[in-house]
Length: 286
Image 1: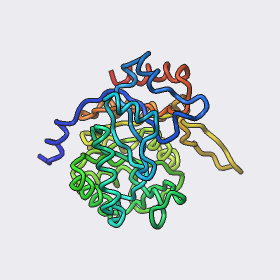
Image 2: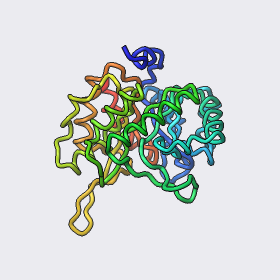
Image 3: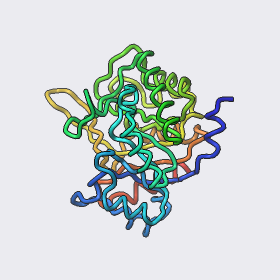
């Protein structure tokens, strides 16, 4: 038995939650997470805090934390495959923020949040290069972050429109999970985009992935677009989930024995637009 199989038992079952990042709650028509919890507490069991250490928490997140409500910490500023990114100053600040928020675990897209040195003016998100050596480097970074902070670290399948490397996405993350002995945050919308790019059905390859590693799921809406004949899906977190995202969510939620949390990413949409899809998300897991 892996140590993860033992550690995952101690992680709390958070239920359904929502996500935020600095300033999201101030956008016109944004979701009021406090109002969501007051009106529909089952849909706001926890708040996933999207954090850049340089920014910290905004007023909305700070009020949630001050109320002692459950959280997870979603990093937005670290390339896990680059050892220099885990510098002592950043690690100390992240640990302080996560502990202060009472985070259940750390998680975040396992890609490139910046190119070159970390800089607030040079933030982006690109998927990792899908090779064995990149998977091993990513896994080693996860272990280092887990050991430095004491938190479980869940890599997230990242978004992307172009992928390079000789591995498919899910075998890549299976290797990461095995080497790092870690769980996974599977973003159903991100995976749906990947499968579309690769010309595959939404759930292709999932039965070969060790779904007992899935601790958290993300679901979010996307918008189909076309530019100069190129068709794509924009991962814009609208409250309308595409059919492929639903297919993946239903498939994994029914087969992931260690699933502890599901986030419906709808942070920049009004409450009224989110209630109906939240009910559908809840019903699938139930």
